[in-house]
Amino acid sequence: MSQTVPLDPSPLTSAVRGRGALLFIGCGFALACASFFLAGWTPLSFSIVTVFLFAGPHNWLEFRYLLTRMPAHWGRQRAFFSVALAGALGISLGFIGLYALGESLVIGEDLWTAGYSLLQTVFILWVATLAHLRSRLAPRRDWAWVWPLAFLFIALSWLSPSHWGMGLVYLHPLMALWLLDRELRRSRPAWRPAFHALLATLPLFLGLLWWQLATVPDLYPEDELSRRITDHVGSGLIPGIPSRTLVATHAFLEMLHYGVWVVAMPLIGLGVAPWNLGRIPLAYRGSAWKLGLALFLLLGFSVVVVLWGCFLADYTTTRVAYFIVAIIHVLAEFPFLLRSL
Amino acid sequence: MRCLLFSALALLGVATLAQANGLPRPPVRPVGGREVKFVVEVDPDATKARLVVPQAFMVPGGLPGANPGGFPGANPGAVPGRFGLSTLPTVVIGLSLFLALGSGGVWLARRGKGKIVAGLFVFALLAGVTSSVFADIAPRPKPKPPIPPVPPAKVFTAVKLPADIKLSDKVTIEFVGVGDTVKLIVPKNAVKVEAPKAPEE
View 1 (cartoon, each protein chain N blue to C red):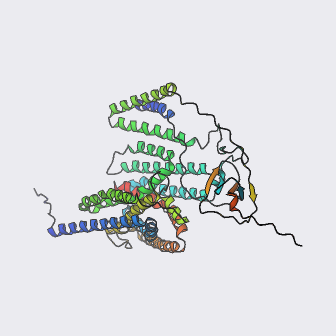
View 2: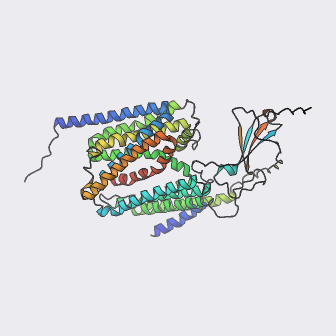
View 3: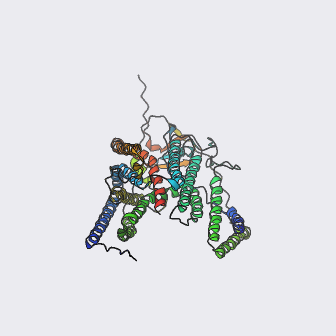
């Protein structure tokens, strides 16, 4: 009877893999160190510059990566991806509409707060539904615990909508790290231990940042942009935590998140140049799909360039508009993360 | 199914005793600008300038039920005896907690953790009964001292605008319950009084 003998990896392959992991971790650590210093030294300026440079490109590259993960034919995953798409679009439109109603003074404070909490409830139920649908796909998972957790989160979101919203602001950058971990599991499993070691340094970086900023004078926003930035990170919501610490923490995490999408994911997850439609399953459905995808990616790239122009013309307004519309990319990460678990 | 029903009934009893601690803090969001009446008044007893802003201007569109001219310190937003948006968070929180505990019990029961479910049920029942009893026999809080009568609002001399007013780089800001005018109240020495013109001969 014949037996399959596993081939030992050649020493050269092992050396390359080891060197690749070392380079990956080295770059990651260098990015974390640079972000730590810049965020701690000048948090507002760092936040402004990083958003200007990376907001648009990271969205485009993230969309490009998610296209790689989207199956060509949904088949048994039709319900999952249908709910994902409908939910991401619907909830995004809800948040955008609520913001518009608030800005135009059409609704009062009570109604706005209730609307915001209601949208958060819909969001939580959407994620729970996606988790439930995912658990029924191969490989099957026993995720029935997601419902009690979802209802508990709904209670928390109504108890304190502002704190709940602030939590999501800080959770979003961490999701990129989780997605990177899932991608490494899929394509570079040998790199995962080193990546986990790098992740373990994050609490140290944050602790050191907070310790260093404890004795530095707080930020007092003097213009609209500074006020928007400090409001965005939840300034004043938790007594005793200065705005400078919150802005620095968020800028630090946000830069890591940009590093994941702009550098790590394209190098590790795409396998080809971002403008190459190879390895996009949808492109293999036909020439019409391929053309549509190419045009969509080109349009997306044009939006990135226009965004840079808008930032240069009026940074404050563009930043406000961007963070409202960009909610859709925050939501889009959830289905792909769940699918990868 | 029986387990679910018993758990649901017990937890409903607990959930109805739940109290949300006040209204949730509204999310931080930008407030649009609007034109309002602005007056400058002189308070002879003041030593620093203060800006008095009615609470109605803190939210877009003003608070419902704002009543200019009412008693100082009144809460124009309160609508007693009406089930409205102010009670919605409490209802949703109670319902969500009930569903969380109920579905959690179902999950544990399906995993064969019957003993844990039974324990939770007994705990919930005890918590419900204990809190009901405690609410009745616990020492009552001391009666609050009577609220002192609100002194009548002072009336200050208004300054005709535009005026030459000297201010420092700090001003105290006060939020009052009623009113439809933003007032800048300044000390006497902050306003430059023009000397009366000598009559022409």
